[in-house]
Image 1 (spheres, rainbow, N blue to C red):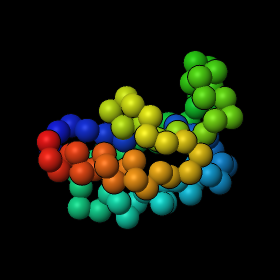
Image 2: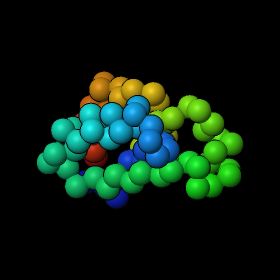
Image 3: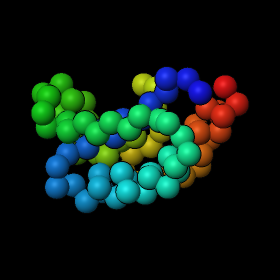
Image 4: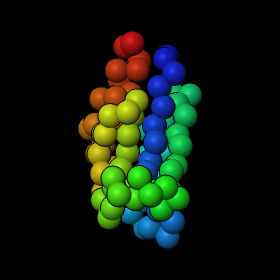
Amino acid sequence: MSNSGLVIYGRQRCHLCEEMYEDLQPFLRGYSVPLEEVDVDTDERLRARFGLRVPVLVADGEELCHGRLDVSAVTAWLQALDSG
């Protein structure tokens, strides 16, 4: 496996952000993939970039999905890790 990682851009007290984090957990079992949560409200540039469009799941700098977890996108990304 590479040094791949995931980032969820969201904000505090965001139920969709919490759901995405929880929904992602079963997919990450068995992988040593770092998962970082970034509060967009702590950085003016991030707040301007994402606005109300959170949560956003980013893998290696590329957006996988936003709003709700895209199971097929996450599965494809994890499969690419396995084959890489």
